[in-house]
Length: 463
Image 1 (cartoon, helix red, strand yellow):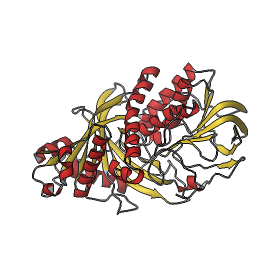
Image 2 (tube, helix red, strand yellow):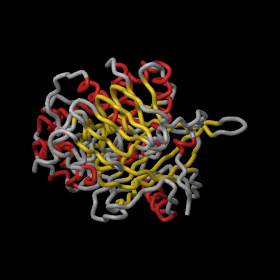
Image 3 (cartoon, one colour):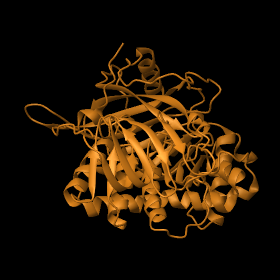
Image 4 (cartoon, helix red, strand yellow):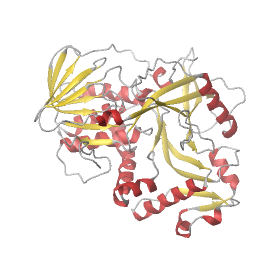
């Protein structure tokens, strides 16, 4: 059994002491959750409004999913665009996709305004497909993108694929036919199962370092309007007509509004003192998946990349019927020592386990060596630069919160708008977190926003 050893937490080199809540406070806005979603929400609230902000974290800043992910930045949802269009309608699905892609510019704004030094690598990334249904689904999404004014994703299909003739004629303008070798080269694989390749903008960064650096910037820039507290667990949230009272440790915070920026799990009570009760089944309906990752060091011989592989193997360790995938990122990495040396860090993930209802997740749990072997087998079979005898420098796991429909919840609680949400990692959380943070500031400023698929709906009303 191996310890949970995340490269992102190791790179923090954190020296500041923990400061927990030690008094009663009155403020305009309380943000619950000190990961990337909470800190980015604080950034936009402070920059774009005049509100005072208190940020609460039950553990340490950026030590949850933000510090235990794969560090990949991508603009796709957990569900393909074509599936979202069937569920929500073409217009809302396209606008949602446009919103997430706009977060690239928001991320640039944050880095520029805050002068952050955490490296952000941006590049053309790739997704490999092996099945006919996958290919058709993504080509259908390309058609929706074109109709909605978004550039179609580049789609390459192998010229010798026996199912090429079966692709519907309506999608002929949304892919190119190329030699199979071109596809395998882009995917950096020798596995002949891959018959198609998608390419679009991706990136990677240490989101824990980004978040830690950003919270320090906010403390320095807004000393009179911003404060944050770690190891400050929320016990209860009481919602009133125009305010809320939070019980935190042995103290109370009174605020005009509260934003939940967690994975989605609310391990505290929420009581609405005006109007009907909030159906807290919503919070219990968010289920957890433990994602497993592993990383190793190699020479700095290749540029940064991010590749997703939809293999024919079903790899969900709890649900073998699930359509899951492996993903790989490669970026420069500095090893600490007497003389710092630059390498590439190869990070791979994909295997997941469903967290049973009522079970408690602990980052202190050991990492299963069997999972590492599954990752190693995948790399050996698919990544053509994978060395035979790999020594993994890092093996880690993290808890991801999935909303029932796989869509992030962003906006006011319909029963009482004092409570707001920017939650639900859904496995691809960095850009949605950034977009959600900006949208919360727009709600605070009472900007008229059109309906979206991110809007929380009244849990007391049946769909």
